[in-house]
Image 1 (tube, rainbow, N blue to C red):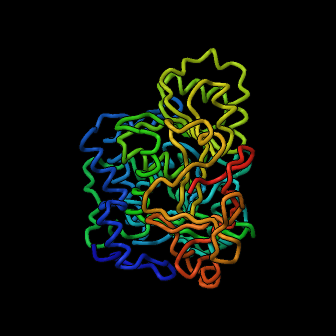
Image 2 (image 1 turned 45 degrees about the vertical axis):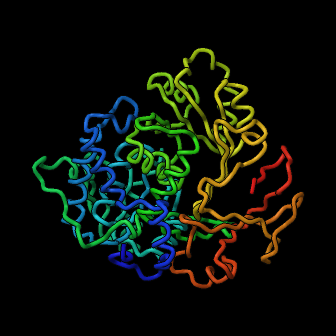
Length: 436
């Protein structure tokens, strides 16, 4: 590989030496995410890629629909590496829109439906988007489509793409893009971008609440997902369930990239309901489940577990709360730590309870370097002390997008990212800790 085919001003890329090493050791994938979908659609075309409520879509159907979306987006006027804000929910339309962008070389800016003027205005100023994808009903009683059209007008975003069947004035229908002729030839992007190019702009609010833009790349994102999911013994075709935002970094990793890498079926739950969660695990014979935040206590306290056949479920992983979940549902549960800047720490299904419950586990890749440092220094803390989690590796952030001042204070002199997260190095089951 000779570096990205088309660099974006403001993006910090890996050095040629780093790139050579990560490809050489297999830490990075030598394909784009769009190519990964094309490959799996050829290998297992009839296998179900996604289930959402009563709707199912195969890999062949997904590949064809997203080819048409890619062609349609370019026909609208969107160009290579144009940015597009996403305010969409957890459903198949979001998946189709994402892969359409991946194939067209358009960069999703990963937002959520709950964002309003302050957040969207800041993202628009930082990323200068040309597109705006919106799910008409994702805002509940809030008219999200009207909001998107209004923000697009105010921020000079020329193309609004909506999931509404009849797009209003100033918007285009996503369905019209992917419901075109099945004979439409796929978009030829050879020579435009490759696996070293940016695939998405993720967000990190940090302690200031001001969004910082994190570029994720085709090659490293896939390698990152492979290392992470291999820790849970995931196999070809394994079925997973996702009940959180798709556009979140964890959602992109588990419900998007994992699906094509493992030729896997992913069950999407568009509305959180703990009973529906268990219903879908039973109905679809889910093998791997993920949860964070307020969902974890709801799962652990669910009173009707015995009404569901959970025999297919191999493991459940969560940011915190593995012990009460495992006690409640009788399925191996594992704490983990994840950060959009590019590190996942976790135990495995074979780890001791002390590791699975009382820590956030270990690094997923042997090429991830992790240190706990005294804040503001490069001095590692001793066993029994808490330190700032710092790391570098094949999926680690090289620099926030267009933020040189922030980058100047976000890294150690030897390139370790300073996360700002404090973790004890000693064994203390009451607090998350990292095993170095």
